[in-house]
Length: 127
Image (cartoon, rainbow, N blue to C red):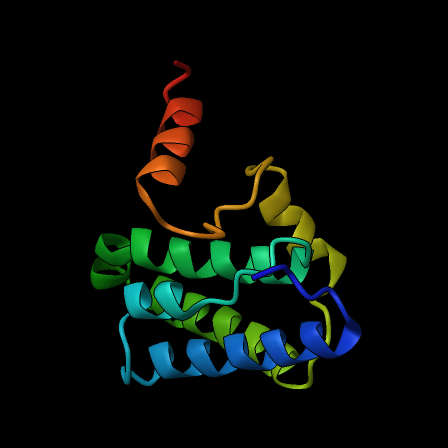
């Protein structure tokens, strides 16, 4: 299905991501389930940044378990992101820039199949 990059689509996707983040923070779903349900709109830098924030939450599990202050700060940060997205708004540029300087390409998979995973792996390991 082609991407719909209309303003209404961006707003709906952002609201969905807000709900996913709140569901993760309230332990209704795990991060991996949220990432699976994540909208496939690769054109929205706000969604890419939110995706990266959730990936970092999952990656920081050990640190979160050992440092309550870090966990609280990360949870508040994600809550702030979710609150912005709940209104359908774009994230501030400083948040988007913080993630885009580390990731030149979106981490969101437009579709997950053997071919797309292989292409991504080749890029990551420089084949």
